[in-house]
Length: 435
Image (cartoon, rainbow, N blue to C red):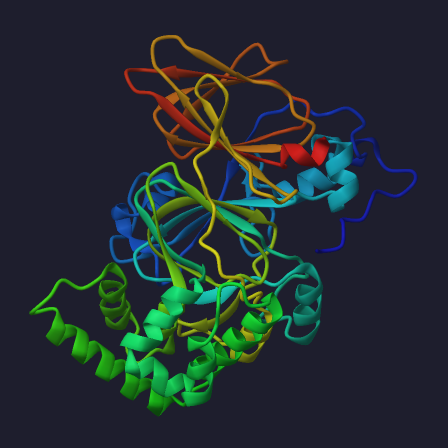
């Protein structure tokens, strides 16, 4: 985690004092767009439609919209262009005392929208201790000292690889795909085939880690040959039988990343399909790769990624293979819990964040979001309406793509205008943190 911003000197000028009362301001934000190559292009991208209403470049990928204070894509205030991070440094009480004390005067969460056209890398995010070590060793690659637990909420159908598949599924892979056996080797294949559900956790981890590391560190020539054989065989078999979802995925990944070990590694992971409104969360040191679709994402404020496949970027295979937990479990799917009419809450097991989905129907309905002891960021996803703070006589117009920062201890009133519902997402500090 970055060092907290320096507090003002003991005798500051009045205009630079850290405020002692929560500033009751609704801050309209201008947010950063990341143009990673895997993003959807032009107006097909939800990120483009939210961030650039007028004329998105049809040839340019619009991959991520970042809402927060991370230095790699900081949000700024629309009214004066200053950074939200700098405004928070002057207004600690906007965070609430508990958040300011725990996270050093900064937002603990980073809020995003992702538009995924092409698979992201097979990756994991380090825990706090490892993040500090990696940042010290390679600060140009690992750009901060924080961990990065995260949660993705599907807006469209959303597909991902997440966590290691169960023992029986992995045995089936070894039985039916000789190309994997050849790279893993006879000894590790035998050990995996003899694994039992009731074997000790450390024994299973050791066996799985050894086999996965053998695959990920195989020579480029061996990987290229194995991928070519597997894809050729699947193309032939597709003419006489229906391929499984996982087999079809392999063909898709190979078209995107030829000769990449990640095509084979995908067989080791759970293949997850989220319907709109469903969510999954990912803890530290868990392997995953987002494959396609659009989602809301929230995470601890970090951009640390350890990659090992399906990417042209730097690969840190040794670190990834050594850091993983090797837990074998299908991820928990969250569907949100109603907290009041028109509002569902997604609560992962991490202190830094939670996300609310608010769907305000037309026709004069009013949703009142009660005051919370921490800061919030609101994103207008669809529709139009008005957002009003408890202390303000006039509301702010809220249209698709608008982003607002709301200080701690501030009631928010939301209403829709026109014939459509107003859909918003709110990111805030996990309510459990304040319990």
